[in-house]
Image (cartoon, rainbow, N blue to C red; front, side):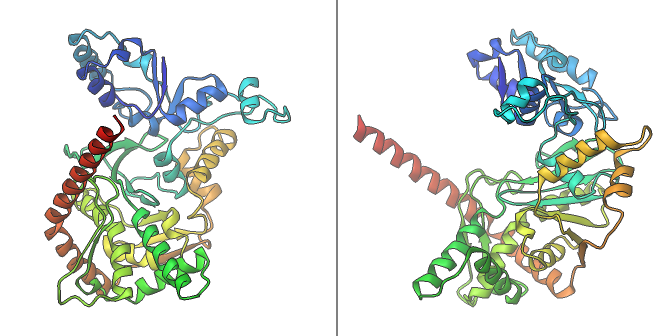
Length: 416
């Protein structure tokens, strides 16, 4: 039984503990990227970065950790489940390795008309994390990137793999097998988008026609003009729970002191700040562990509107931030680069060298913003209030979840 979901060793073991009947029928476990790759090429393999999210890898990222695999298999055996890590999980492929060819069946899945020919060389499949690192040229040690869309996460390529055990931090690898620490926040721009749409409704109610792009530009312009500390307004953008801040249930919320001036500019700025607040908390954990990065490259939907979000991110994380012309292209751009590397690299050329020499040699397509003292100080004040009011956010989430469950139960009784 092949499960086309992002399952990991932890998910499998939890299913065993839950006594889920389907566990004994499992033949293979895959990720979405790996599942699509198998459908197109017939190869049961994923890239190193993708594999590292399923099971710990050996140093170098080319195979699953043998000692940990033995321990894991023993734990399963104690529960009466006989599964072998190397058989159940996909084979590991490093960037640049031939990961198969597009089969005739795969070609017809993509193009039922028959025009697309089989035989195309395929790169090792990677998810958003791996392709994002490639798309931003963040695969060397001490480089990092931030992807900001409906969720937001930072990936830092480590000089060594010695990061303490933090539930808030995920340990992965680059597509070429270098150790990476990831801070992942469940909610990025979802709540911000909702507020932008509300501003648009207000404008239209006043008889002002406002296109989506124009409305976003207006929102970010207001944010740029807000007080550096948002005038005391604090926003929580949680549309889901957030492990980094230890919040179990999401509850979008705005909190302000009675003395805080409620202005459109301060409110807009607080919502952009909210997109980076939890990320900053996770980055602080990595700094405490000695992880270093001199600059971050940003990409994703949040950076389609230039300058404002880039400057706020630089102030929030107190690091220089690069945004390239391809910032809005996302993982598809990174996947295309991995395919080009697999096809066009020289025999001894590393992924790092290929990206630097063939793709990002010219820096004219990027903008660079440095932290500004006033913005850094303002965000620090905002973050103090943000942390101080987290208990209110946690209680609000619990209360909303309780009401929702009660409503669902009541509706169930009415239907019955």
